[in-house]
Length: 132
Image 1 (cartoon, rainbow, N blue to C red):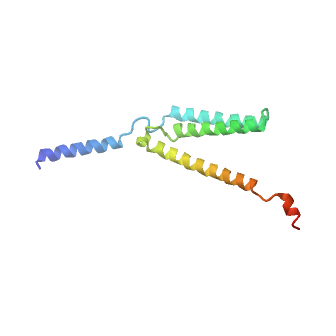
Image 2 (cartoon, rainbow, N blue to C red; image 1 turned 30 degrees about the vertical axis):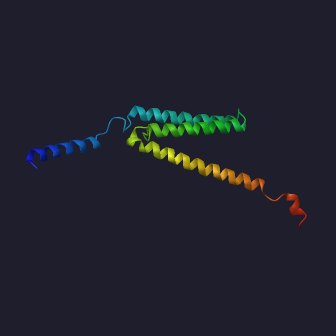
Image 3 (cartoon, rainbow, N blue to C red; image 1 turned 60 degrees about the vertical axis):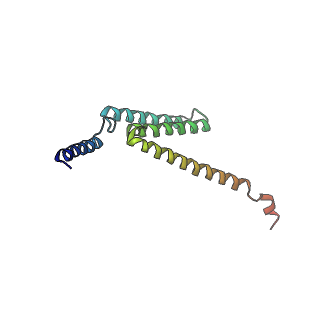
């Protein structure tokens, strides 16, 4: 191997390692993006608080609006504070998020299913009274 070839390989290796450590401006948030995230988070906290304290809507509607605000707030936090985008970490962050959501949905759906069937398959109360 000649000295020129080794030098070219060393320069290429250095350039490649430099590119891996180079961060584009989307990796770290600016003051403006943090403030946008903060203001959105405060608004998405005040809305459910106001709905609960005022009591202007039925309980089920209020509950659904609280859940919707919570989901939107999760997305705001992921975008503005955790900097999760489909391009971040080569898409692996998004893949991990999707996997986590699938596992959580399976756990919650399974728990609700088991609790529903436990409730419907319980021994009726009238047969318990006659056993005494």
